[in-house]
Image 1: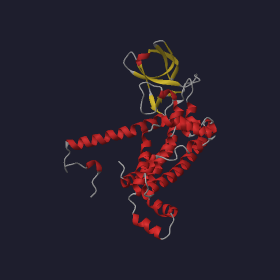
Image 2 (image 1 turned 90 degrees about the vertical axis):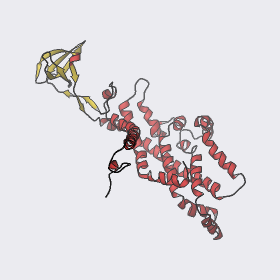
Image 3 (image 1 turned 30 degrees about the vertical axis):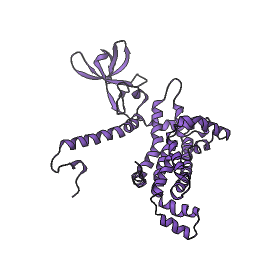
Length: 348
């Protein structure tokens, strides 16, 4: 008989304080991880006025309106507390100082003046789907999406090839200075990207690659994390298999391509996931080397909604959700490789 997850306790049949603390800790973790994502999705469906409300609300609520004959624009509805203690739903015509001119939608000819503190706005759930549809007509989402897709796919393939070749040499070959070489590779993790940003930019400029997708793809092709991850996995491969292939006159390229790479697929899948997430969300380096809108990636293209005087938050949030959706789907479908691959590589 399958026991429900929420009924599992340390002592069968009763709930102890350790069980309460465990579930509270797990619930807190869920809120911290998925709370910002939920807020982002719900906020992307709010109107510009709802986004500027204070205090902010989690749900996309908006002011309820009603169409009244004789008024060109819909009027906002309020719940008004009358002097006799009754509560009525009235529409606001205008506000003058600390008083508001209201009317009953059923009797639009009669104007009722009430203090502004006696009214409470009537709110309703409303999803602003136009936040997703309208920018697609003005925002070159397709072009930026294709640029990001090209950068992510090509850069990930190059990263897998270069890192696997370096890891193959460090794991399979025996040569003088091997430990020092591995130490230098891992030591590059301690160098912040801001230190090498200017030298790499000068190199890219001298090569004439500015304002091209290759300027974004090539600088991060080799990653020390990927080399170390693949090397640790290749160390677990049976040496007898490799020696047997050499005795059968197989070249080193054949051993690398036909034996080592197929056996290293779990670790390659982990590195591919990390590379996809990093390349898709990269912002600083593309911002430095791309100045033409034709080659913008999605992350740079989102700056179009940020002006000097105002920011179109409703469009920015909606396009951010659409930008995060592809990499989230990749992570959902391939996340099982992360735990399997990392467990086999010995990384912590």
